[in-house]
Image (cartoon, rainbow, N blue to C red):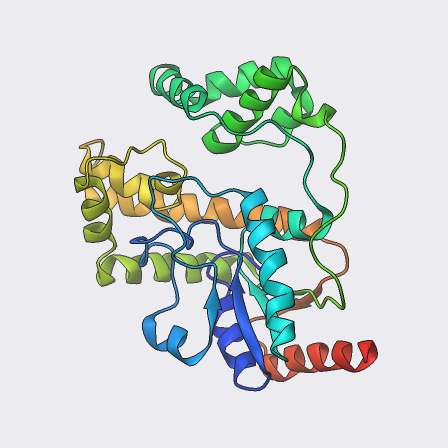
Length: 303
C-alpha cells in the first residue's frame, strides 16, 4: 500500500524476483483498457515477467466498483494460493483495501441517470455547492470530503437520496473477503517534499511518454464524457479540460500535479487509519530484503 508515486510497483516486481508471487492490482483506474500512461500501468515486459491480475478488465465507458473488486479479489486470492503461490496485492485505492478486509455496507446500487443529472447540475453550480447540500443531509460524511471531491460527493448524495439514509447512518460492513495470514506493507517517503518531487517528476515523464495523446484518443471516441468515473481519474480530467479549451497545456500540467498531490494526501489519511501496517521508507537501503523478510516470517508463523 502507499500513496501514488511512492514506488509500490517497483517494490512489488522486486519481491516477485525473490518470492513465488502473483500481483493483484488494487487500482481503480488500471482496470480500464486504453488508460495506460496516466495510470502508470505496468508495461508489457513487467506483465510478461510476473502474472498481473485485475488490469484491463473493462472499457472506460463502464463502471467498476469496490464491490466488484472485492468479488474479483476474493476469487483470485484462493486461486493463486491453490497454485502454490502468494497473492501480492499492490495499489493505492485504499477503499478497495479496506473493503476487502472489512467488507462493504449494504448500500443502494449506482444509478447512471441520477449521476448524469447530478453531474450536469455540478457543471452549472460547481461541486462546492453540492457539497454544501450534502452537509445539510449528511454532515458527518460531508465533513470528511473535500468540497471539490465530485466523485464521492456524488455517491454520498446518491445514497441519501435513494435510500433516505445518509452514508453515516448505514450499518457498518460485516465480514471481508480475505482469509489466512495478512502482511500489510505501507510505503511512504519520510519527508512530504520527497513525495511531492516524485509526483511532479512522474507526471512530467507521463507527459513526455504521450499522456496528452492518450487522453486525446479517449476523448475522440465520442462515447466518453468527463463525468465518467474513468475520466475523473487524476490527470485525465485536467488534460480533458485543456483539450476542451478551459486552460493552456502548462496550466493543465500544473493542475494535474497539484491534483495528484491532493490525491496522495487523501491516500495517506486512509493509510494512517489502517490497523498495524509496517511502514517502509521507499528510499531506505535494504528495502526489498526487509519487505521480503516480513512476508517470509508471516508464512513461517502460519505454517
